[in-house]
Image (cartoon, rainbow, N blue to C red; front, top):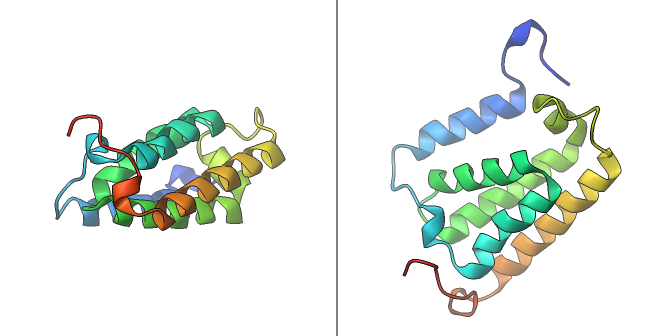
Length: 129
């Protein structure tokens, strides 16, 4: 789960690479997300404060809402492959009921997929548009 020697985990390293790559292009702000897409970040808080913060920051690595949502599906899939590693990265493994956490991540992933399959015009406006 956690890398020995205090270095970043594989998941943290992948996120860092994605963030650096994303810094070279337009940075989407969460204010640009439609209501339905922004709900992804709100729902993430019900799963984990850390997940909400990560998804909010993650959005800036993408230039469009759909790219962010597709990236979020991949990110959530990665968490579901080893939820214990994700929780251990945040020192939350001992305090978290892993099956309940995994159910929450699956529910969040389902919402993201529903959002992607909804035409952009039907996702609601943006808060600051």
